[in-house]
Amino acid sequence: MMSPLLVRISINPQVCHGQACVKGTRIMVWLVVSCLANGDSVEEILAAYPTLSREDVQACLAYAAELTCERVLPVEVTS
Image (cartoon, rainbow, N blue to C red):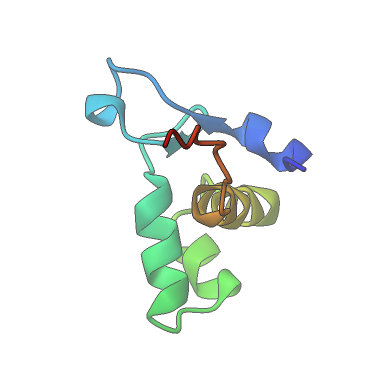
């Protein structure tokens, strides 16, 4: 099930070479997720990027989670 937070993420070929960004900014999802992975707190990220909201940070995590979802694709086996 996709998160309703994903409406906060934008992919536009004219912005940041089409990389996923927080909507209305040029702050890329990978940057926010990398900060979290490096141990930065949400409060530290919000202080460094004041245009972001707590929900934007959660949306970045939701986007990253969606990318890691395992998908099962049916494959026809022929003998």
